[in-house]
Image (cartoon, rainbow over all chains, first blue to last red):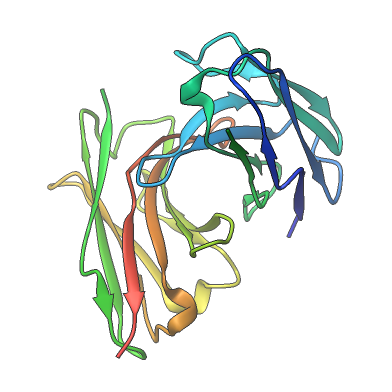
Length: 106
Length: 120
């Protein structure tokens, strides 16, 4: 299985801050990398697919980049509703695997 | 819009079978380009993919769970199901169903999840 790691595991930030989360794959996955936002008790939300494509309906303050083994998700200016956990997921091979998550806290 | 809703018992005894159903509304489980997947998240841990149902009716599952997992679909009721047999405490988790894009393999629509606890 491809192992996914994320850093940091958690971060504290304020409304208006720029935040960057990184994700690393244990082997090259080209751009088969997706990002999700999850708040407890709710359905996870797809933010980014194919490493940098913004899912329909997701605000443009979310952006992502990367290829191969190193990827990043950036929130340009945190809104109150962005405080959540963020997960990367590789879709290069079966089984699809997820990073351990990054919790963005106030 | 397409919505998914998990249902099933919240408590299962060790060694018994966990059974969950995902009801799909606003779209058909026989239409592409989608797969229909199950995932889970133990408390304090990451997400784990359990397996998927293809629109052909075939399935694929995580090798780590394959010997204990059965995924099936009911097109007449537009729903798909998960069974995990011989459960143990480590199977305690929030279980999610999700729609998976079969061209780019991302999960674009999820259910809210249902907590299943394995305990006697």
